[in-house]
Image (cartoon, rainbow, N blue to C red):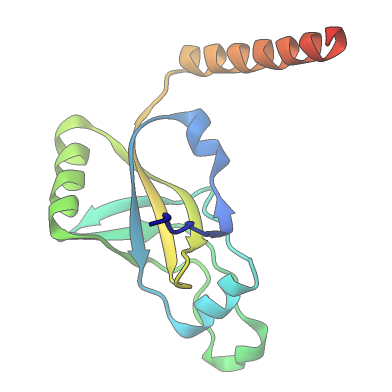
Length: 156
């Protein structure tokens, strides 16, 4: 049997997260949305760059994510920066809450996308904050790899 190809329609990506945090583990979470939010996401409009996830009262919440209003909805629109509940299995939730409380980790959203069934999903990462010297080292490595690629291209 051939494996089924996983298709994802990317809506928003938090590229800054990989620079600011050392990603330890990532997982997929569902998002509880209202109808106008889904319509706005289907237009490809969202921003998760400044957002984070927080565990409160035994539930996981996405905070500070911006999904702009859907203009045809008129007065029945949603609030663009409202808190949205994240849907994860209870075992995963306990693991995430434990890591955040005990080890001081952060829950950083990496990608917001539609899966192959057309359901909005969020790739959530369990991350540890990088220090300034770690960020400088990452920038230095990235620049060196870019320079190597240029040299190989010129000589090849």
